Length: 119
Image 1 (cartoon, helix red, strand yellow):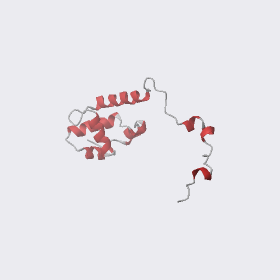
Image 2 (tube, rainbow, N blue to C red):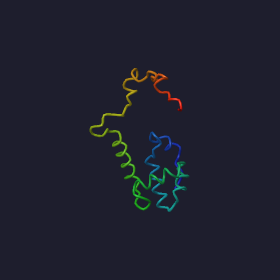
Image 3 (cartoon, rainbow, N blue to C red):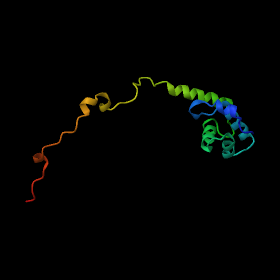
Image 4 (tube, one colour):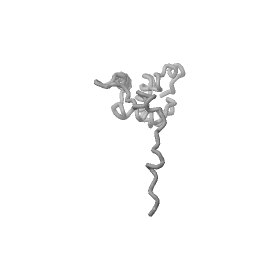
């Protein structure tokens, strides 16, 4: 397994996602019996990224780069579509009507909230 050339790193997916060549390098590293940390070092990625990728896509014995790449694309598309009946992000009343809630809080007159003297 060889570190990726700079040209492959330049074609990285947005958001720091793994590329197809990086996934192939992970599969080769697993086949060679390399540790996740060694695979990550060669890809210049965090160990947690490699570990998460492998565990999310079948584990160390069943990981397949092409299937993992396809599954990632499906997961990304699925997240972009809003759930049925979803109305969008929740907003607080202050977002909807800032003038009404932006006023300062009214305070009670001192006579109504003071305590009676100890008696």
